Image 1 (cartoon, rainbow, N blue to C red):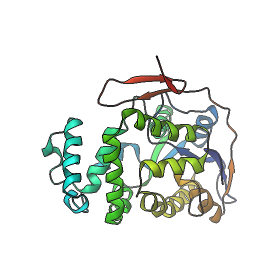
Image 2: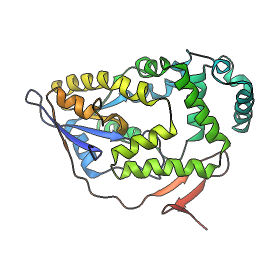
Image 3: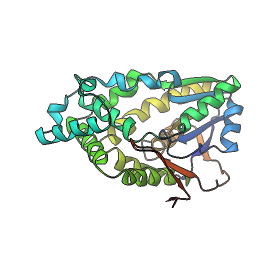
Amino acid sequence: MPHGLLWSLAHPSAPVGSGLMGTLHLAVARGTPSWPEATQRLDLAGRLVLEVGLAELDGLVGDSSQGPQLAEVLDRSELERFGAVVAALGLPPAALEGASALQCALLMITLLWPVPGIGVDRMLAEHATAQGWSVLGLETPAEHVASVREAPTEDVAALLRAQLQAAEGSPWDRWRSADALSRAYRAGDLGAVVREWEALLPGLAEPWLHGRNGRMAERAHLLALEAPTFVAVGAAHLIGEGGLIQRLRDLGWTVAPVTVAPEPPPQWFFASPQPVYELRGGAPDA
């Protein structure tokens, strides 16, 4: 199983200087897991490529309006529970009128898992922008969401029910789940990242990971043949037979791990509709 978040890319027909990084979209720690080696390689490439261009990220939920409606996915008691959760999160019922089940699930994710700070993708994009480097996307927003929109109804139902259960649970349970994902990420344990990601977002692994990796690998390949490119995608996209590491190797790339210095223990935050609690060293302050 590949281990590590930062990888060098080399190809006989490509200019030198390209790299690959697995990111974490959720900002689940104070600050960002930034290593000097990562920003050095980004500066060496002089061009950043994310899954979707940074300016387009905020439109992703809006592109997910098609697909089955809530009443097609949840039974009556679940719909009542969902309405209570929406009200508890401060959303008026009219805010979700006409929304698809997938749209509701993605909105729940953004409401349940927000925390202070920025995700790794945005951290890299801000660094690239400050240096004057280009920030491109491997997919359009429509492509990004289409693979999930085409997911079977039962997968959308599993995702929505998982978010409903998380919303009804303890904020500390959500913090522990986010904490487990972030610790796996910081350790560079890609297998654990995938397991924790699938636990948080069941039903999305097949369409949102495997369904998109082929397209992203092909486009990353073409971009890196053209000019040095630093490719940053969610860490769960990297591993497995259909992951970007193997797909790029199949396209003739040498993909080698880059050793990075360990980081000090992070200071964790969890944000909920209640006041924000600061957690240091993995445990709440007394």
